Image (tube, rainbow, N blue to C red; front, side, top):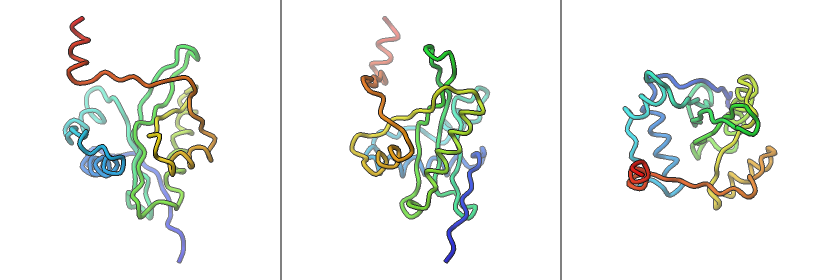
Length: 162
């Protein structure tokens, strides 16, 4: 049996429901399903609205989407250049181990270079050893000394009032 052909392509507006399905699957895997409140309309507006805030690609095996990556630009004042930030990378369990995730990361790394980005970064849950192992094998290293802080929900609303 021959290996499935891998391809990477941009998500189209009519495919937002599939992206939402992948987001829900990822949230289940990460034990965070209770935090998914986004709707397909929210995602459609963020990816394809008047001011797109993010972009997404599908990783396909034999032309069938089996994973996705959602990303957006950040900016480094120290580098004076944009960065590419990977918000989510997901490959369905049955499609893992075939190089699809690595190919999506390579595609995004190439995009970052083409866009003049000074860095390509992402966060990973500290317990996700399979992902950490893959990322280390690709040369990614944790950013030492940095702790992510987040303000959301009511805390965000309260901060905005100060």
